[in-house]
Length: 261
Image (cartoon, rainbow, N blue to C red; front, side):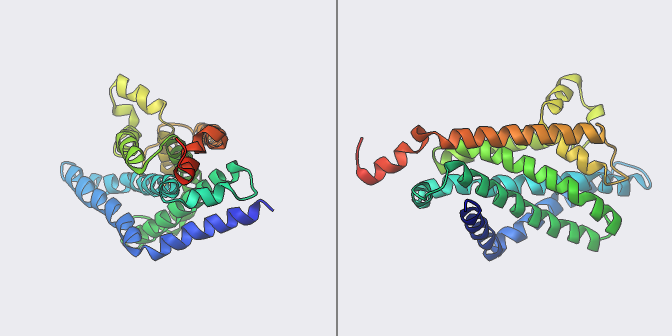
């Protein structure tokens, strides 16, 4: 019976995504700007075929960026529903509260996958990836999307307002992206930054995607990436479910209705 409300929440979030066409377009425009501006700019300093190789090197990074932004923005609905009263209706439903978190994270994962798939199709049209690479990217994209959704869930369950979530996300999202090896090989970073990359779970999602693209030089083994992503995702989801299930977290929502201090 618990899967019925989960299905309803996931369907609601995905239908919102497909209605927001501007959101889908921006999910394509953002990585293409990075690819054309950063890729062409840095590639112009390289010689011969190295410019095209660098564009292909960026493919895992911009796919991972799309998954990261897509999943985090979808996880924002946990906070959005608190602000506008939808969450109160979910909380009084006869289901365990952790099912709400799981439904939101599944929706965030699927939303990120849809956006990343559209980007990969666009990359196929311009000739940067082929069918073989695309098929190899799919499982890596799924694992990375789960990791990104789990990170977004962790932020959302500790955020009380939309403004609070936005501040945390802006402080969080760019260091996570830049210090992941998405734009350059991890081996070429200074020692201090390399240690930061090693403790960044998103780095292993980016590296897992690199294993699917021959021109992208991976920094970790395939099994290391899978192990780190799996362990982090499980722990992050469990912590998010535990935090959201605490009654003290939801008391302010019902105080607004009753008017009690």
